[in-house]
Length: 370
Image (cartoon, rainbow, N blue to C red):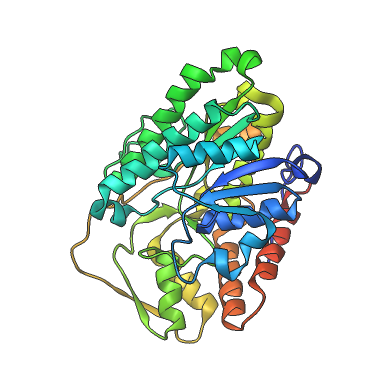
């Protein structure tokens, strides 16, 4: 498998920086949170996770034994008192907020849960930060869907208007507004020397990778169908999404957290972490490539039923992250698909999935070396 090499000023995964750091990660039992927990563990970070129980069965958190290398606390981001107590006990230096209700279609069914988790959960997180003197850097992970989607052919920049058609997308726009309000009101960059806290937000597109079993997502639906010998039903084969392997935005969040910690106010703003323009592909493209990579007669079919509104076209402009953070995508979409197939075939074969995850993380890290 070919790996695209590149240079970056300062190794993103700096073992010296991350080793021993006290990091509180919300949403650590989810798909992205589990991958990030393992990555932080591999660098010697003292990770404290705060999240609900794993959202799926099976889950990456359980399959890869994520909890055995960290302090895992089961809690609801909507429980402010519990969150305050966890912050007070563990005194984190860096906070990465990933706890969320992450599904568009579920948000139509449960809008109150979606808003209370994604909006008030962010308020609670920032309140806990406000009362914890040990915190120096905060990364709030939102979504590319936080932008008011105008179906443009070009990518959205960080200064575009927040919006969102559906409850999920809108809640992520609200979470960005909450972050900006707390930054301006309590952690203003111009007063950084007084408060010493830098808050940034990370906005990423559709992430894919091994170990995602979420309902109503393209790759998990596809993998379930393949492993059951079925043909997967697809709603919108021509919709274009900024597909990327999960390790891509995670590397951006880690780099942003390090910059916020070391350099402070100059990086306390929103950041896009999306794939190269070449990898903004239609659903059908990723399906066909996954089927070809997997083999064994895998297939898909069109689901012609009625479905809630979903954006047809959404792409990020990541120029700012590339120029100021020196971040850039490393794995092509084809390489991401290769790694997904490798992961799931290993899982079917009964491999040690914690070791498989850590191996893929190390493979990805080799693309970040100067």
